[in-house]
Structures are given as structure tokens and as C-alpha cells.
Amino acid sequence: MAHTNRPPLAGVRVIESSMLGPAAITTHFADLGADVIKVEPPAGDYVRDMTWPIIEGVSLLHYHVNRGKKSVTLDLRKPEGVEIYKELVKGADVVVEAMRPGSLARRGLGYDDLKAINPKIVFCNISGYGMTGPYKSLPAHGIAFDTWAGIVIPAYDEEGFCYIPEHASVGMHAGPMLGAMGILAGIIRARETGEGCMMEIGQSDAAAYMDWYRSESWMAYDRPKDEVTGNKADNYERRAPGTAGMKEGVRYQIYESSDGHVLFMASEQAFWKNFCECVGRPELFEKWPGSKFADHARGNRELQRELREVFKARSSQEWIQLGGEKNFPIAPCNTPKTLVDDPQFQDRFPIYPHEKHKADMLPFPLKIIGETLPDPAVAPTVGEQTEKVLREVLGYDAARIEKLRDSGTFG
Image 1 (cartoon, rainbow, N blue to C red):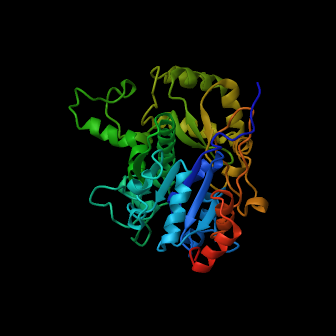
Image 2: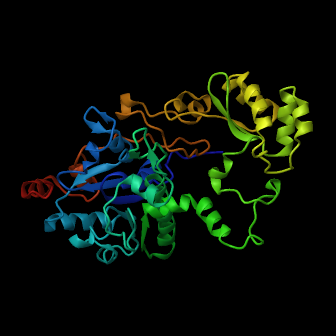
């Protein structure tokens, strides 16, 4: 089958106005070959100085979320800057306002202003709490969206001080990804109908949406017990929603191996039988066969003690290999530090090396069979491509660019 070397989003142009992490909404577009032009104020997006690690004076956050983009500096307090922005929008598919809602409108660059010059434009705002509600103007950073959504539970140290526990960030990653999906839907419709649209997403909303299983379970449990029950394997007793209901699991639980930990997941009877036969312990299945589906042998400490000793007898990789050979579900328990050494990770994620990209980074995870996604350029310095974009995208000549530079339009 013949394949093209043209990236999937080649021909899509995005004009981005962003501050900090929400700029990740267009990283997905850049990774897939779109032309993403990041319009910055003359002082630049201070994302380059935020969080840690700092790599040769620039943050990893900037290197990741702004890779593959072009940076143009425009002083939008000047009419020339606003006019150039509008010219860029004329030939674009998307405008992203990754900052507080209304920031562009205050400069005469809101959706109504821009659709007047490009009816097909898809305008998307991504902010902390969205454009409506009592928190819409509340300043926030990434962890706020997860505490708001109930994903992060406050912890206490040995001195009784409350602290933020280690956790995987959800809202700051899910918001940009869901927003990008919405933008693509908008582009498809705009190209078919000639009509653009304005959309918005709150990163807090995205965090809540990604944790729908727990919140919807609690809503279900508000209904009468004769309408909403637990699983048949638990004798219909209601368990705590999501992973909170896993604490007392036995056939679905983390166990210590000889050199680490593994997650054992034999909740189906057939998998449980395969495991018992594999380890030469058929009596465990005979004594505790369990239900056909979703049986975790909750609270069976006797069985848990037996399994604790069984799992200590082999290394994590030996267990993973056996699970594949004998057909029972088992998984490694990696950490963010050890994940890069996992053979599955190494097969799936050819790291962008720091020698070329300034930071070692994970590539976009989508695979297009028979094709290779473009290797993104290093995240830009402030205004690095200003003159290049004006020359190549808008067709400005050297004299016009020099006049704009002298006027301070670029800062």
C-alpha cells in the first residue's frame, strides 16, 4: 500500500495566543504536521522560566508544549500589531486563546472580530475554569483543576502539616487533548460548510470528565439500593467507586515480586484457573474458584497470604513473561523514573533526544502505519520566526519589515 510523506495535518494553520501549560492544546497539532504560529508579546511567554527542571536556562515545560511551533512577537497595543494578527488569521484555520477568556477581544481580536475577516475560522478558548460560572475569573495553576475535580486527596506529613501528594496531573493534560479534538471537529465542519465556530473548554471540566466513572458511580449510589447494586461477584454489595473499591481485592491486587512489584488482575475465573495451573497450585482454584466474572476475592486474607509468597518467588519480568505465555493478566508496576527502562516503553516511545531537541521528550503516541510523523523543531526562542513568518506567510518585503521593526511593533 502506497503512503504519502505528507503529515496528516499539513495544510492546517493555527494562530496561537497562549501563556504557560494550556499551550499544549496546539502541541498535538504541531506534532501532526500543522503550521502553528505562536504570537507572543514582546516580553514573551514566561513559560520558559516556569517549573522544573530548567535545562540550560529554559524550562522543560516550554521545550515540550511549544515544540514544533514558530514564535512571532507582536505588540498588540499597537494598531500595526493588531493588523498583522488579522492578516495571519485570514489564511488560518484556527485561533487558539490559551489564556483568560476575552484576552484577545480586549485587543479587537475576539471571535466576532475575526470571523468578519475569515468566516471559516475556528476559535477556541482554553482556560482554567471556562467562560462561565462563579470561578471563571479565578486565577489558577494546573493542580487546581485536579483538586477541584476531587482527584487529589490532601495528605498530611509526620508533623501534621497538610501537603500536595504526588499524583499524575489530569486537567492540565486532558483539557488540551479534549480541546484539540473539538478543534478538529470544528475544522472538518468549517471546510464542509464554510462556517467556523467559537468553542471553549475549562481544564477543570476536563479533569472532572476524565474521572467520570467515580463521580457517576456516586450519583448512581444516590438512587435506591434496589435500583443500583454492587456486582454479582460481591453478592451485590456496593463497593466504593473506582480504584477506592480495589483496596480489599485479592485476585486483583498489587504484589511484591523478587525485585519490585506487579499488578495481578485475575478477576475472570478462566484467568484465575490459568494462573493456578501455571504456578503448580491447582488446589487454590479448587478451594476458591470464584465467580465467572469480576470476582476479586475481596477480603480473603488467607488467599492473599498464599499469593504474597507465590509472587515473591519470581522477578517482575519473569511474571510478565509467564502472563503472556500462560494467558493471565499481569502488569509491571513502574515509576515515572523507571518507566523509560521498560522494554514495552522502549519499543513504543523512541525518545526525542536532548542532543537535538534540548530535552529528552516523549513523542506523540499516535502511530500511522507505514508512515513517520514529522520530527518537531525545537521550541522557539521569543520571536524567533517573526520576520520569517511575515516574509513567507504574509509576503512582506524587507522594507516593510524594517519599518515595522523600527516602529516597535515587534517589541
